[in-house]
Image (cartoon, rainbow, N blue to C red):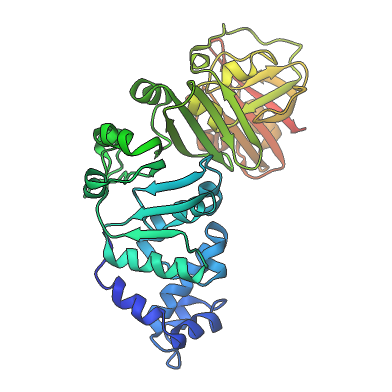
Length: 388
């Protein structure tokens, strides 16, 4: 929950005087703003400028309209880019977990009406104020807990969206769905009576197979951005079970749940290997790297590399490198070649750490050369690479 002075800060931040001060200092160093005697409510303005500057990329719409951004809510919210791409639309949607309202804002563009629940009244007031600043008129923010609202709800929605709080009161990260707040699994019988479908956003640590086990038939979606797995989404009551990989900025790929069980036998180093394919983290998370790449090369681990004689002729969520050489990992020999150089090291399926290898070969972090470390058979090998 947010601190109780949030409401007081909103009453300050919404005044023309303070909004003008924020605008005038938007490019300034927040630490310097706090020391300026001529700035009204300097500490409050400094904090707001700090978080608006941080929001420039993550929350560009809120930055553009100089919305109020409470610090804790900012740290916990989705990026606009991630929120916008969810495949939800219809006449009405119930958002059980408003927070700063980023998902609510995205949903408002795809539904005629959105009801968003936020039990923290102070934060709810902030969201209402921000929605007004952004000209969003089809959102109703209700200050109630999701459990209470759902239990008494007599409306019917096309979709219910929920992004459960995945931190305990002590701040520990929670992975199991029933440990999060609200407990979506416990609410599912009731949710099914008030909505056609339910969209659940979960930690990227949540297991895809477990998602199907708990909520089949469902669409399970793994989302990555910039090489980092961002979230796992479950869309209940699907026409058929489906596993989707979404790499923001690159595209989407669909798989059958059975593709998670695909296997392939390890093989020895082949002279035909000319390219190294590195699966996107979303393929690895969903355990479908083997299914996606086995027709293009040799791959025997969902967490490993694929070795190919030719580049794939279709778009795939991979990074491709040309293999210059493959040799056993012998630090002394590598040190003669790479000592003092800036080396980018990529590792898969090996206990060796990047830091230990750099130290062993006398290299530093950099981009003068690219090496890949892995295990083939029982032997640690190193590949010298060139970007395609």
